Image 1 (spheres, rainbow, N blue to C red):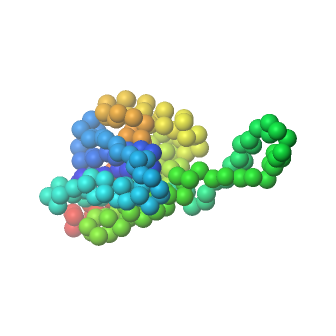
Image 2 (cartoon, rainbow, N blue to C red):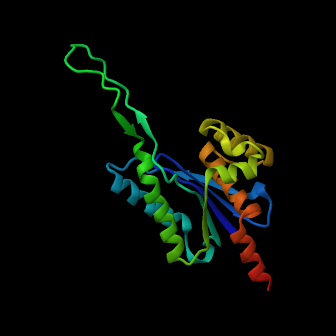
Length: 194
């Protein structure tokens, strides 16, 4: 079974192709970016094109796609005040902003799900805390973003998975989670055995 694991983002999407059962060292990792797009629609369109190329020709299509689920809530952050050099404006602490990439992640997730459905590929999304806790062990689901990415690199080094960057490493961890923990994959194997 060929599992495609994804750590999707606008800045850099990591992917891992894992033939399971098989040796983790043979996992093929890579990444692509959509940040060259001028506006959000163009970025999503670039993502869709690159993802369609990744899913590939019919004879080597993945048997299962798993990706990191986008957060359902968008985080807001206090906006950094501009220096008031002339004394003309005020430092309003009530101004908030969001990370614009967070707004696009649900749309990207929809692109992945739509491709999986159109090609009839079984698929699943997994919350970051779930796969991190399963792969890294107790407390792994509560790691900060930077610590989690460092842990993914260490995990891949330990298993000798050739991940070129932290996004590829997280995609490899997500694919590994699917192979070892996903109930959907277990059901697919049970159906194939029956």
